[in-house]
Image (tube, rainbow, N blue to C red; front, side, top):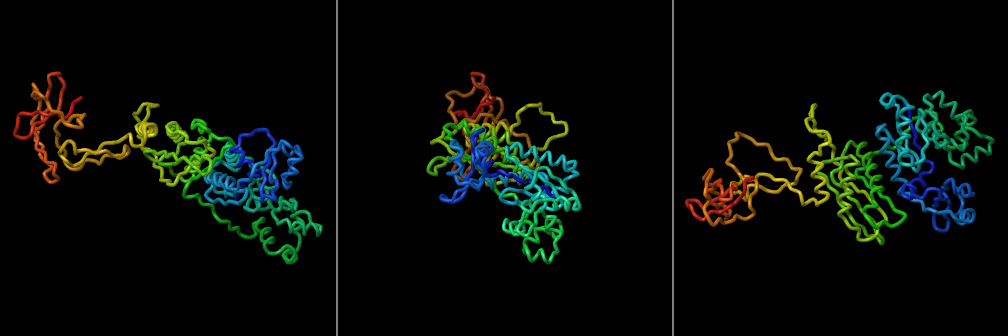
Length: 476
């Protein structure tokens, strides 16, 4: 086996920087109770002024008066780790989250598919780099060793246990994944490296460091099996971005929305699924929110197409108050069925397909503005059809088909009385007699007629009568 570790050394900062666009300012992240807050990360500008992890905010501000202090957002860090686990699932089916800052994935089974570890590592780095997060990557035959090596340095790749043993022996105890108290005790004994620790008699070592630490050393060297909980993709997708300043217009949401939809696309690719409905939630002050649903005719996962529909919906929506956050929420994840295409597709290149057009119209005009038509088993013209959702396919005809009489494309909502009989009858009569069972009985003789204006129309008279002509529809 070969395990890769993706270690995010400044996750606390990057999870906030993904929302904050401040570039070169001195920034630091603090965490802890109000009276015991400590700096957990400082960027290069802050470190150059003397700010470092472990300081209290007062000391940090004294050293760097222009320091901008950000509150740690553990939920944002966990959300980022979930997103990277989803990304990693494109390269491995065996993934472990090692919170708070690492992901482990077994890549030995994927090496042939991705042309070896160097190529696979390059792809992982490119994927992570697009998110703007700092990442160290290491590979080793055991998961624990991969994590220890990623903590120590970036780019280490040891593919055999023999090579791993020698590399681990050179590591300082502080980088071996042991508890700080254990490391301090071993330092007091004059031990400095893992190699010195490995040379001690096992019974003596167990007595000095305890069974849990000894088991950790065995896992490092592959002497005992590792059993970590396997990561499972969540059943729903929720991502939230908070803004540094209030957003007053929906047009300003395009960039953060694009980022969220890109994350959704990677999530759906990993699940081999799609999305047919999602909700944009705009957060306002005092807990108020605006929900904007976006629907599609069929499951999709292309971020560009989802962004286009979402932007159209946002353009139709007015902000009742400034927005301070944007949440993308997907509660249902239907399977994605790729469109069926013939080998020699006769459609013109660049031609907009019906589904894309219908989705654009629904997004711009509203979901209730577009309908399909379906036949109903009723001979009465006004009751022989009904509205359907535009994505509903008409049932296939069964049995024998017979030539049907001509029907107009445009049926009047209410029949219109004609003052004069039509000068020319083209076809007819067609007797339609039905509805006696529901109180809407009709007994009519229908004709295709030509009026004095030359228009072709569909008109009827009551059965057995040749007076009181009534216009019911127009032919194109």
